[in-house]
Length: 143
Image 1 (tube, helix red, strand yellow):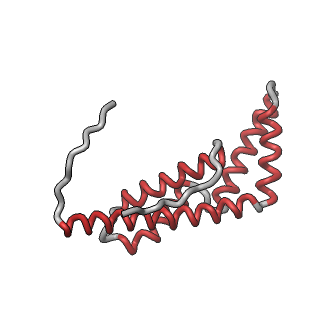
Image 2: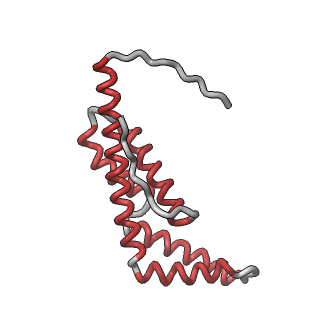
Image 3: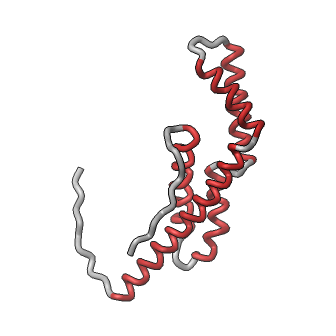
């Protein structure tokens, strides 16, 4: 795969407008990351979630599971997902949160851009919850 870079000749006004939009998007990303971090901390301190997760991990470690254990594993997975949703930690809840926060930037960013940013943050949350991610990072805007 190759990348072609073309020189973009913009006027001073266009550069200023592009910078404003990138700044707005970086700000929204950071707002969403802050909210997601708070939700993840609440989730870590939730005793019910910790108990369910411990039971789920015990079932996952087993090599051969009976039908009862498989059905119990599915029930636990649904309960874990419900706990995450209650804490506001789902893709839809992040999109809804950014929709409200993004209204102040409605002149600069479209709803699709805001929704895509929520999706990017959700991918990071998924890595932290289910993968090998350690923490969510804020976006640094450099001129």
